[in-house]
Length: 372
Image (cartoon, rainbow, N blue to C red; front, side):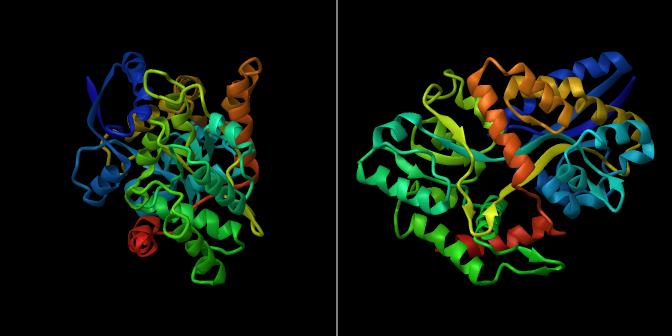
């Protein structure tokens, strides 16, 4: 029996990503093959693992992400090389920004599982108590946060991920909403008046106004989610994959006391939301390229994306599956509302990473942005 070796995202803080792996036995039965999961890594650990790959490892499939595609494109096989027809069908079912994000110079290097764009998550009971609606701009968010603090609500008004590449993504959103750009053509453009204003705003939230969680400078994405679901924080920007965790009374203390709205980064530059996609890639030096391609395309099939989205709340990469979800949620207010919010973000505010070496760039920039 043939064996495929896979390195996948998962582990502490990334448990929601593991739901899809329950479909692997279906693939094994269908193709009489064994899929051996060598490691399940968190996102930072996964990137560190890729840094050390040298071409001699017996790895066939690896979890990937569009934001880091250009940093690791030397590792990934063009899926059209081994299954051009199925790859084309998949590609044509993706929204425009994502179709561009998974492709480099005509090579399709990632089979995307789902789309990540964040929305504003907020505690409804607190907003009802202070008589406020969800903020539509950063200034409104600041004013609401100050009001929460003044009302002596026993929670921190706001927090955000201020560590690692997460901070650079949040900075990029605010920078663009303030009318600036991270890059202009082939040149970095963030050192500008808008860049200074964006960074000053982030710093002021924590240092001047003190409306953020005290551990914000050390927070990564999973820390933000943890602070929200345990009731420590009133407002966060968070990803759709956490929505079902927040709604689960077994995992969340705020399961019946939160809602979702369009994110607040709207200023003179408009509404921009950092967007990306987790997916699966085939390693270029895989000894089983054909089987590996069949596996990654199976894992992101229409059926499996529908399953993963219904099970965990992820936003499917395929537009056909998104339409199916909206249709099936007509009688579920929360689900229909959240999907409608996310669809609006994808269609109107999706901000992809355009930095060629995003990994290297963020590692150099985030300590500067985070510096007291």
